[in-house]
Image 1 (cartoon, chains in turn cyan, yellow):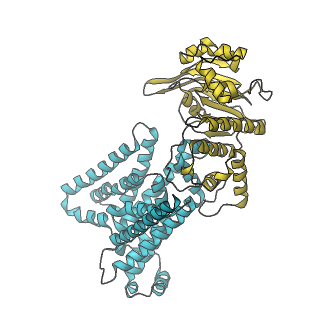
Image 2: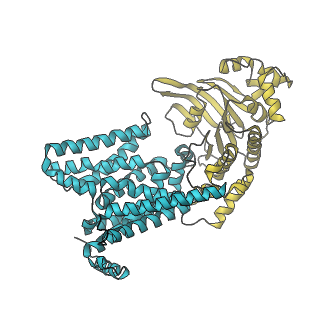
Image 3: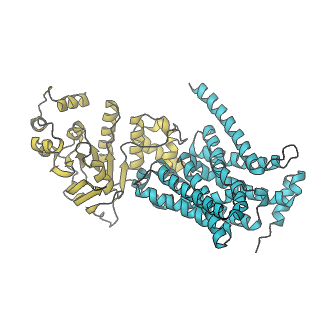
Length: 289
Length: 270
């Protein structure tokens, strides 16, 4: 059963009195991004600080295998990509914790295996290539209410995790041995973060596609890191940049003079923020000398 | 010097019994049996690759090992808390994390981006003051020098009110004045909180100046006990293969300028 979001949609149409926001699909996209952007921004802070951009890339690319399996077994690919994103995230952490191979190498193996498996299935069954394209490029304008409900549930869980586990995650990101020495359950936080990142990556794939998932996570947080002087500041800057880029990107993409795809437009606005942050950081550095 | 410290108790704070660690078919620790007296400043010494850090990490539960490592419970039946200062904190120096945020992240549940209580800040500043680092509270962690970072890590380790403080080569990469300050702070903290200190080091001048118990390690225990009685030529020779002239210096108190350890001690004290 789909949730009734009519009241929220009406409120958004009044809040943003633009012609494009009268469209139902734009209202849905607005709600989707209002949920997704803060999640990506918050997780992005940890992805950037813990140098896990490649890790998030591997998780997002695991959906190639997820879609392929879904197609082969005639199961909804939205279900199989969730399973594969979780399996990739947790699998990489499990093998990396054994410490016999570098994390980069393990991530590389997972990423290659997922992409190769997906492409092998497509080459065998060309009729499913269209489905792959949908996940490769994503589209926030086609998001449905079931997906919004999933995002809303994840939003609650993720921000509960961020509130109760943020300081512990900061400890683990700083140095796992130090964190363990100080009583932090490193394994629990590493696995929880990987699972959460897998689920956020799936939502991002629906919105902007596999190719731009890492950008959703990394660009706002990187710009925030240039602007912030503290860990708390970086978190809030990342939320502000992620949310403002997503909403303004969506609105810009719907203007007749732009008429661009919403996903790339969102990322381009975030990249604009990043350029500004580099300038600010450079000026600040010059004055500090 | 800390020898003959009356706060040392005969009962061990940590007892290693037949501890063995192997990795990739290579033996790192072979049946290590030793004890850390409660309330002592125990140094674990040995050459590079002797397994000193491995033994410490095994004690912290971060490395799988054979044998037993026992930390007897406190009188109230609870397990002793352990504070840990790593050898070199590998972290992203560009991360925007202030010293105050680092100090408060371990003592409050609420995230540092939401709220930091006034009381938590006061406690953090008090601990930083105890290691002469209160002026660093607003500085980014990545901007600290090696000595400053070690002092902040020491404050962080003491924050949990540990019963055992484990330090892995805490003065590596720290200049002489920073090293001296850190060791004095350790003595102060030990006196103030009654800690058992376990320090991995290969700096014998620190051992002779500050430790009262020593474990000489080179994959196996080569010797263990009070410093003057343990740093004997045959034990040092078995441990390091060098420094045969050290023990008599510390037993009779004389200094020989042709001995590198004596020169180390002279520098340390000046």
